[in-house]
Length: 198
Image (cartoon, rainbow, N blue to C red; front, side):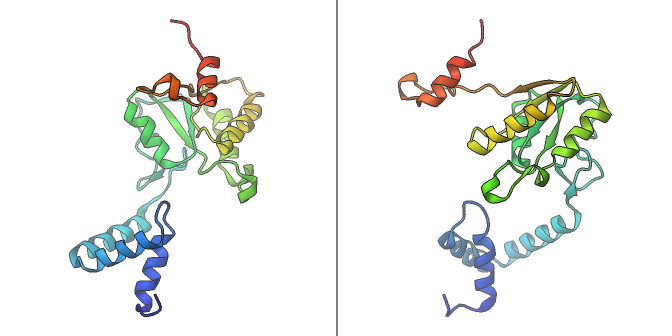
């Protein structure tokens, strides 16, 4: 791509940094935007506005353009129940269910020593401060079911053992619409271990 102007190459490199976008998709996106003058101006303005106004909520570490985020600022939310998630999009996923009335705490990642993500890089100290200072009664761990998610769940569970809070995690098992015969052994094993009485 040495024949492309420098600014186009820089744009492609920046788009390529986004998750799920490789060099080919980045190139396609850049050329698509460059042919849509109004859209590229709107995108540039929106990105600039986000850069200037978005910051972490000082309570839960979700993104906000206000003092506290809309969830922490809502007096109807149960401040004694905290759902711990790894990323901003996890909050959106839980909120879509309409079944959670508490507040959140974003770790902004998961433990991954191989990638240099140790407990001090996550918002774990801030979590323990919230528990001490706000009379929290229940912690729900809603972390990815991956090696990193499992390691983070175990670490936080052990850490919270000294506090008088109920700690639970999301149930694991067979997704709706799945056939048992096609379910992998790990998921099926988890479903059996986490079975509930009817």
